[in-house]
Image (cartoon, rainbow over all chains, first blue to last red; front, side, top):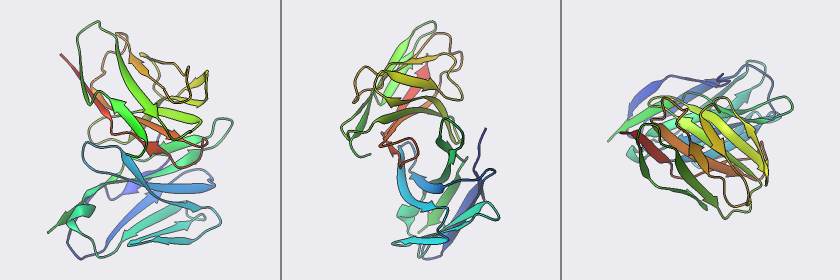
Length: 112
Length: 112
């Protein structure tokens, strides 16, 4: 079953605008990761935020984590056409076999 | 795509045929994973391996088999028992089970 659910499923914006994607999860986690996938390619790791962190930045990316609401957001500022991709959040599955569970993703289209 | 490679890029399978997808990494990672991605969907875990000579079933292991005889290699065999094999297959590796995962470029499997 999918632990992470991204919202919205698809997002279309103009170049230069900001894009915000949200991820909700169900169980307690010790970290949450965001990945990007260009069409027909493998996933690329963007950022990892730990459960004791509330906000993290990396270039034009800003990630927040609210453990009380079991949600995270990914903000891409000053978007570019090259940011067009699918974005996935991933959370570790707890228990004896910890491994990542990926959400269904948000498809971002940045119009030039 | 980092130091993880997958081959071939495209693979065609005939009815009743077994096919093997290759995954190699030179990152000295202990853990390796196989995911299946269907159009517009997130990733579903097929098999994973935490260490050489050990592997575990993921969420959709039926109709698939793997081996982990070398640290660098984690081939996936899609057997004739897998009735709906058409999908995009992604291999990944990580230092540990919950660490950042590095993905290969993927193999697209099509049934003739």
